[in-house]
Image (cartoon, rainbow, N blue to C red; front, side, top):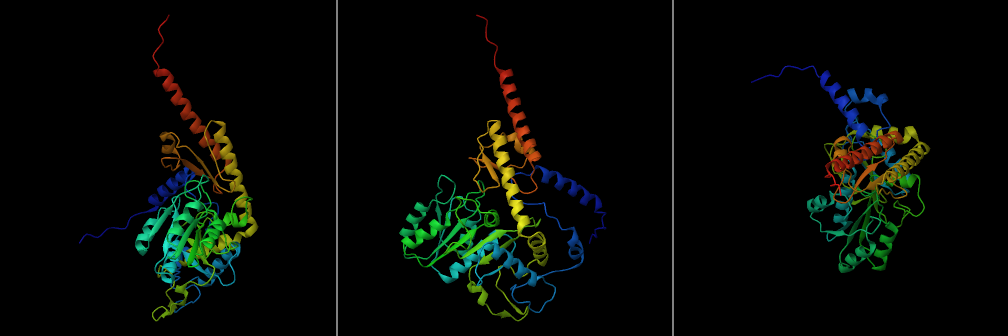
Amino acid sequence: MNTAEPRDLKPVWEQLGRQYADDGRMNLGFPGATDITYEDLAHLWSGSLLNNIGSPYDGGHGRNHTKDLEVQVVNMVADIVGAPASRWGYVTDGATEGTEHALLDARRRFPDAVIYASAAGHYMLGELAEKLMMPLVVIGVDDGGGIDVADLAGELARRRDRAAVIVAVAGTTMTEAVDDVPAIVAACDRLSITRRRIHVDAALSGLPLALVPVDGVPRVDFSVRGVTSTVVSGHKFLSTLEPCGVLVYRDQPLAAAAGRVSYTGTASVTLAGSRSGHTTLKLYKSLAGLGTEAHRARVRACRDTAAYACERLRRIGVDANRHPHAFTVFFPPPPPELAQRWVVPADDRCAHLICMPQVTRSDVDRFVADWQALVGRRRGLLGARRPAMAAS
């Protein structure tokens, strides 16, 4: 049997460090904040196994966990989004896990439940519906990119005999549109659909909108009657530097009543058995270490940068747009060469950049200058290829 000799990995780490630093500077397209860092937690990373197994509300047999802080993280997020005292939640591996937990809770309550979600909803919803063996009805979007409430009401009316679980979105993937949750609740009321659950996938926009509301943008938090659960992302706005989320219910889900597992001494109430206790440390530092006012300032700075980016792109002739609350600026797909330098995702209709806290006006200026230079070179090439006109 061959035995591998130990390698000197320092060059590998140095190369990856340079690569990630370069990639981070050019990433304007995916919403991950990187302005909050965690050097002061390094000693806990390098020498501690922190395993948050089972319920965050029950320590269980183990002691190497951060469940007390996890409950505080859930409560801090719940306070921001206006959840009542009956709240329940946990730290997830990401917003998708939180949505899956909410869908599973709906299925347990209502075995006949149908999922309703907009065409602009998260791409994982189809897989979650298939995994949970729940029917999914895809609803069209309105002119603003949010769910078409009239279309939703029509589909609900066709299935009034079945329970409904509606996945609303606060921050769609491409344009950061926000679904009109109060209108969704009103549509359910008009149709007398009482067997229902309304879950808000608020991965990107949930916390910013709760911290700094914007006139004309519908509320999506627990101040809206009828919202049963929501999930926010940790790595998007809170800058945890690793994928995670925080799931919050208005009331305890059915899973919360599960009995203890004898081996762990705690109830199995989450989708994963073992969960990272280190993730909770980052969330706790971001929320408690900075405080609410600092996060409000981060929201305002991101929106200001996004407004600046929209204006700068329009100035060079790009049809750029943004919603008034959004960090996201969307526009027609740019020249392919631009995507070779900048991380700017696009579909067949639009592309976008997202002004997260680490994105500066200088970054925007460099992006706009590169786009303008590409357009100029293309025009120059077209001009050079035109045949000369014959003299008359």
